[in-house]
Image 1 (spheres, rainbow, N blue to C red):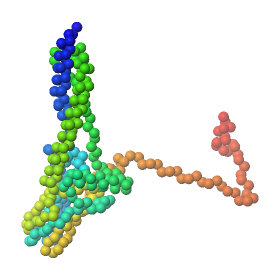
Image 2 (cartoon, rainbow, N blue to C red):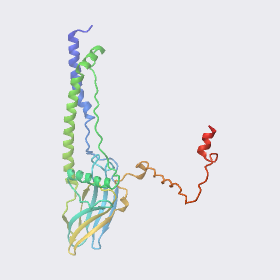
Image 3 (spheres, helix red, strand yellow):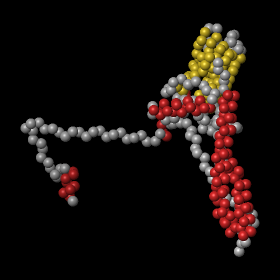
Amino acid sequence: MQSATTRTAGRRIATIAGIAFLPLALCGCVHSRVLRQPAAEEPSRLGWSVETPDGASLTLRQLIVTNNSGTWVEDALWDEYVVEIRNDGDVAIQLQSLRLESAHLPPQQPLASRELLETATAENMGVLKGAGIVVGVGVVAPLALVATAGGGAGMTAGTLAAAAVANLMVVGLIAGGTYVISKAAVQKKDRAYMDEELLRRSIVLPGSVPAGSSVSGSAFFPVTPQPTALVLELRDGGGTRELALDLTALESLDLVPKEKLGKQPRPKPPPKAPPKVYAEGEVPPKHNPWACGRCSSRNED
């Protein structure tokens, strides 16, 4: 038979062990969206380019989309176009703006703010939903909290069971509070990192490119399905002009494939023909119950 001293000691040990174990358990539950080492696979290197006769060119080097190779944020609500603008001419060129044109949305401007990108993506999705277009963007899944209980070595089964029952509510409250605080801290840290990285990666516009040099960087656009062209507006000694890079090869970008949309609703059957109207003096044919399928089945019964 266990003494009161033994039971009290068991409770204390179980409490200490449970609290000490919580950080280990919570590390696997509080998940950071930031991938400080992006996926091992090399991002798709496109190398699509358009240029003018006097040496100005726009090249799309990479396209990094949500949860694909090269991504550095899970479930990012933006598309990253890595571009290079080169000037092989004799005079400097001034870069005015860059825009993304698409089949379903108005021209999109690059943004270097996480909040603005997420807001613009939400607006785009609302517009596309109203047009019956299904956008294939990743959705952040809620995190699950898994509670685990353990005991120290040398404790008997009876003491451990009693201590677990006595401390279940206390450990549960500590776990819940620690999880909420830890999750908020991780999210705050993630947001700060994303804001800094967006600014660091973004190409600076407006800007200038001296003769014989180039600039490169990322243009972050809200999620824009079916882009058709990436358009650079520039100005030089000859005035203002545009370079349009054709993107029609990306017609399936950010769209759910048709085969994954599920079964389409069956078409409605054609309306039944109206009953025949007999002219005056016309005698309708007599009903033959033996020739009528419905009546003959009843007669067989």
